[in-house]
Image (cartoon, rainbow, N blue to C red; front, side, top):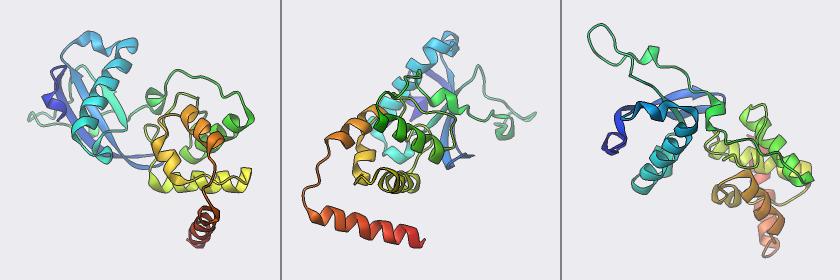
Amino acid sequence: RLLEQECVREAVVLARDGASGKQLVGYVVPQDVGALEDEKRGALREVLKSALKASLPEYMVPTQWVFLSALPLTPNGKLDRKALPAPDASDSQQQYVAPVTELERTLAAIWADVLKLERVGMADNFFELGGHSLLATQVTARIHAELDMNAPLVLLFQAETLQAYATSLEGYKPTDAADFDELREFMSELEAV
């Protein structure tokens, strides 16, 4: 699907090992070489992500992106996968916006620890930083343990950014005791693993 985009000359998507497990990395050679500039790369990444999200399931959309002037080739003209550079996790992070409230600072620290990153800002997206469902359960378990707060897993999946997640947690009101019972049961199962 990447090659269907007008702004893409060449592309390949590979599953690579990252700090938080396997993740899809999109290697893209843009039609316009000017798109390789720092300020234009972010816009190109957003255009490509939006296009892919419109036609593919979320798990098939790359979480990391590397923009190149050309794909590396072997002497016989095939893609040289070993020569492809590892993605830079900081490329997936948005411009850093520091957390302000105590909840935001704690959530940022939990995300950074679980994702093995130096820091996480308010505009960062958990899944674009390499998060996945297993790490999401670790986040909710840590929130419960450190903040004694019910943090339904679905809120993390619905939030686009740390800012949105903090806001949804601040406004979350459990509907009934069943929510707490379900979370306690889930936590017990998680701790048993």
